[in-house]
Length: 328
Image 1 (cartoon, one colour):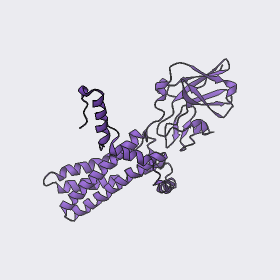
Image 2: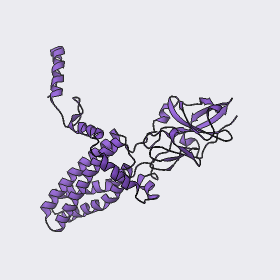
Image 3: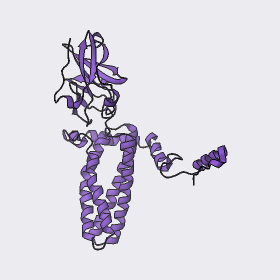
Image 4: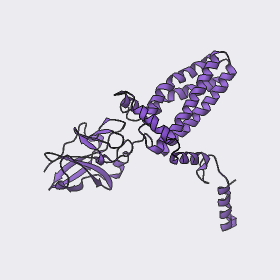
């Protein structure tokens, strides 16, 4: 037990550290990250499964999903679809476990397991489509997350089969094993989503960093027509594109999907394409025209005053339509 005894002075502090270092908790504590988190951190850095990752990713990219790919990403929803879809199988399987603890609930438990199995397939497809657009470290953790969930599905499939054949005890045992596997997969998925920021809006912080009002960016002559230029507003990197007629567009430069530099992307048809994963944003208002990004880019009003470009953060509730550049 870790304990600090103030009466022991400096020696007591040293003893506390020795006891902390000698014990390795499973979960993170004041003593350190623990075995579970340490294992996931090592997994992020280890290239052991990179060859498998490359093969699976190429396979997912070649699937003829068309517009369905953006649907599975959740662009229409405004955030990834996968976390929403997994609620059905997880909820069904957890409910089945509760019924297994009650008498005379065999049919209900079996039905819930079947519902979970049916819902697991589309949830998995959405998850794999998102996984194929992650960074390498996230993919490594995501592959183990998927392996845990596949194990859970296999156990629940065996549980459903056993119950159908009248082997209720075996079905219950496999069901509880599946619940443990899906719980482990959920814990790894939480690490992927929150510690590694998979699926998070990487540009959300911009409105909290930029001060209100107009900010000077630079002289008009410093921005060639039709080319992407990176500048800063309140130390926040922004993408600046000047069009013919001195119309200027300014967006946050950090891609909302995975933080890619939009200023290094391709400008075409009034949009910018992220160089990392291909998300397309409209220059006039930052709208995410195509995924995998599910959130738009923070955008700025722009004007030219005395031959210099100024920008002001645009708030979504300020106007329903795109703002036009003020030229002077």
